[in-house]
Picture 1 (tube, rainbow, N blue to C red):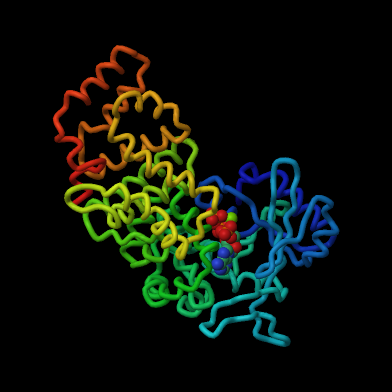
Picture 2 (tube, rainbow, N blue to C red):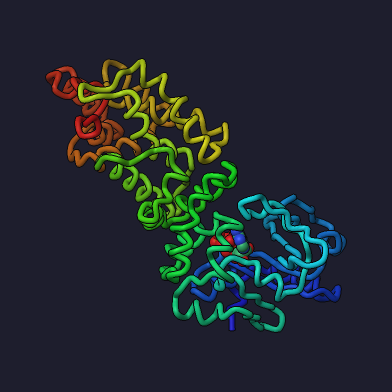
Amino acid sequence: MLDNKKISKFAISIVDELQKNNYEAYLVGGCVRDILCNMSPKDFDIATNATPEQVRKVFKASRIIGKRFRLVHVFNRNELIEVATFRSDAGSSNNQIVKDDQGKILRDNIWGSIEDDCKRRDFTLNALYYCPISEEIKDFSDGLVHIKKKIIVSLGDPQKRFEEDPVRSIRAIRFSSKLNFKLENTVKDAIYDKSYLLADISNARMFDEFCKIFLGGDGEKNLNKLESFGLLKYLIATNPDNDYAKKVMLEAVKNTDSRVKNNQSKTPGFLIAALLWPALLKECSNKEGINIRKFFRSMDKVLKNQQQKTAIPRKFYNYIKDIWILQLKLHSRIGNQPYKLIRHPRFRAAFDFMLVRERAAKIKVGPGDWWDKFQKDDDALKRKLIDSIKEKSDEDSYKKFGFSEELR
Ligand code: ATP
Ligand code: MG
């Protein structure tokens, strides 16, 4: 029923080995869903009735990880596969699911049967179990029907399920964009009703979701959906209250989407710098232009505000600030500076962001065009370009480093 060629051989061998040790084992979740939807899965998850310790014993190269969800990483030289033990949400016997007073699950490590495990997954399309040896799919919740109908349906009452874990609302949106599936109405309602709980999710987890939702290739669709559900504010500390701010955010995610499609490198640093640019301008500019001193002082403040929403790993700080500072430098272009700037390690990213800003500000021929030419291997042209800056009236620089469209 499923094309085994699309499945990692290593993953199949893990299932096989577990079964040879008399355990149940299946591929589950995103990989089964993606193959059924004719997509290539990006990773493979396995579910089994073996406990983490038992899995650990079967595979030498493995490690038990996690606290909230204990599971085992089984790895070889090139791959890492997550093996999770069937879980139950049975409020039965000794209830080990620890919830906070709003119903959010804090710890969840009671083992159960495959049917129990199915019930505690998020959506029916993510709750299909596939055995690559017998080539059988186990479907306890009409996941196959819902995939056929292209609809995202919650397992159990979505109001309750989103209370337990509010991140499910972001996941629902992400899957609907990725697969072009509709959200069932009760799921939509639960997103509206329960998203306020996202404010309590740890910023580390929100950063993971931020990356998945904006760096996966469907950023544009996701941005629009998050905005229409009112969820953007939980992920980004910019309130896009003017046309330019909305545009620059949209152009930034579009830029990332096209990089994903072309298999180019992508970094959350670029996207964070771009998405927070309007917030930075708000802090340090007015109609007259950017106040440079305030600009430098505001960078940390803007990053700190974002930290409250999504953690930003330290390693991205300098990258983000470089992109911002280079925006000013790319505007000025005086003397020998342009020669130095194109050798800056972040030049290319900063230049890309300048193009994003220009598209958002609807500028056809601006500094971006100038820099495009300046990167050509033509010394005479380079000199001519620099001279053109000297000759130019103050028109370009009166807004000092910003486009009038973005300073309004
Ligand atoms: P992708 O890997 O494309 O993001 P995925 O569905 O594989 O999608 P993972 O985060 O890798 O998502 O999770 C694997 C599986 O674990 C899911 O398919 C789902 O069954 C279950 N799962 C993940 N997160 C949750 C959650 N927050 N609540 C309930 N079940 C979840
Ligand atoms: Mg996955």
